[in-house]
Image (cartoon, rainbow, N blue to C red; front, side, top):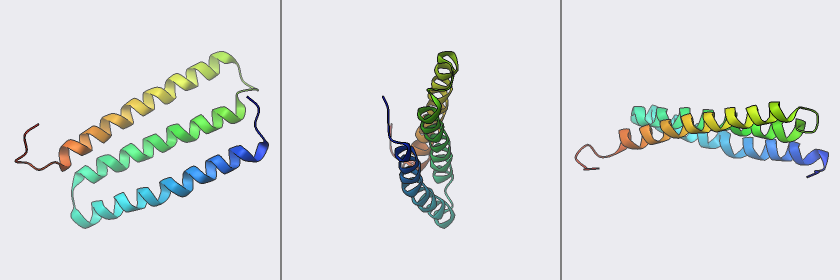
Length: 102
């Protein structure tokens, strides 16, 4: 699928415009309430953002790289997403009410 050149720039900029304030809110909550659960969410957001930016970069360079490289990059991005989701779940469990049953 071909895209106009500026679409990738808009995609990257739009992603950062959304993710940076979200990370700032999570950091603020972590500092205000001093709960490590927010730290796990922050790690999740950072890893997810790295994966998303790699995916956008892959969209940008896929025509110039080999299919093996593209496949390996997609696998690495998937593993990064998996790890980020583990941190997300860890954050959920650490912020739950201690008296609540799972």
